[in-house]
Image 1 (cartoon, rainbow, N blue to C red):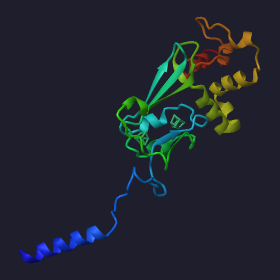
Image 2 (cartoon, rainbow, N blue to C red):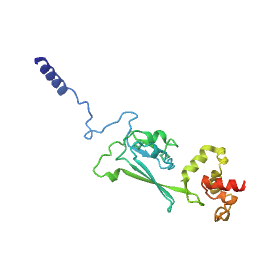
Image 3 (tube, rainbow, N blue to C red):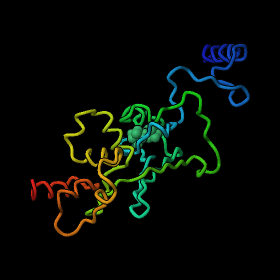
Image 4 (tube, protein in one colour):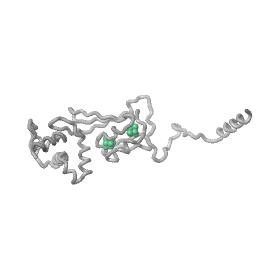
Length: 202
Ligand code: SF4
Ligand code: SF4
């Protein structure tokens, strides 16, 4: 019984004379170590609104809502739920859409709403059936990534036409009636409607 008490006393004296292992944050600024996983920071220029990060986020901190009336995809990132796992960064299709900061880590507070961020991206919607295809930035990213191979997809022809204005507005905005026509391929049609056009006319 005597020895353990002396050992504890020794430990207490050592603890008193050595500096604390923990940092003195917030009294003293904390400098995180290299590759520290802090708050995810979105790069609006390089995020195309593709939904991939929402699909891999374990606690569902990232959610998407498509507003087909306003033609926008609203992305909601709730850092109150974030576990800083880095999956969103790891799986981002552009590789630069979101990165975990090694500087921003102090996001604790009493108001949960201040740690919720929103983004909006323009949606591409099929003019025939109204189905959501994806965001405009997403399809343009795929177009750039594929290079000339992109033109093997009719969907990319739509985007190219949209950008280069190969056909004038009256051609691109033809009203789609009951029977889909080949000219309708220059509208933004979803893969299902395109298939109907191709089966019928090609
Ligand atoms: S995966 Fe990347 S590009 Fe896609 S929505 Fe997430 S951050 Fe944006
Ligand atoms: S770091 Fe993990 S938990 Fe946080 S938003 Fe990204 S995927 Fe979700």
